[in-house]
Image 1 (cartoon, rainbow, N blue to C red):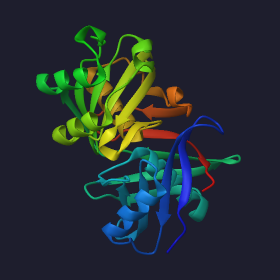
Image 2: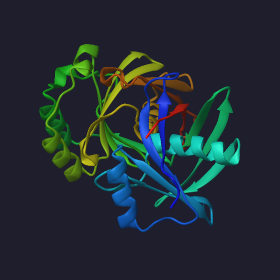
Image 3: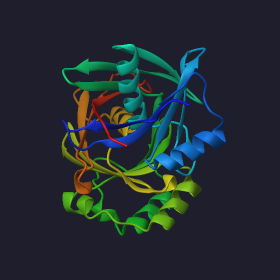
Length: 278
């Protein structure tokens, strides 16, 4: 079997980012084997890729379960493909969508940009919102009224909670088992807490209890979903926003989100990568 590559996606220069496993093989292993490998790697996700009818067939596994789409693992895969195949755009066939990832060398560093699945968003239901606020020890007055709570989607569903106060974001805490149960019941991949520093710069933390991980240091799928939500909302994004994530974990990450004008269209999310030693 091919060697697992370990790559940190959305790094801030040569530090931080979100580690992902990448396995590129001639054929995908069976699902049980991929699940075992992802658990052994221990990162929030591992991407598995093999040549397919439409470019590369890709599946993603967390240590606990398969997930439909993972942004940071796609960025890591883009870097791995660029290293192996040269700079280019690589079509990807996911379980439920076709997307692409671009990988290229930038000096000594590899960078990548994904084109997300289609996006959509809807207001969070009162029951889901109440449960999420209770989980994080928040109250309605903690929320930023400019960015109403929403269920946002770009290949997977996330709950978005925008906060007024950066200190509330830094103090994010919740019970992992309770968070996992809420996310499983609501079919959520993450709960994204964000603060808008400016219309084009956001600070984010993403709870990923359903994957067995308290928090992701960089979440490309949620970043894409946020981009689609901002477009739906009519937010003055100016065509792009930057998301700073992972700072409170000691893993500073930067995600660049490009937002086109077409409702529901794919969002481009890009960032730097750095290799990790096993």
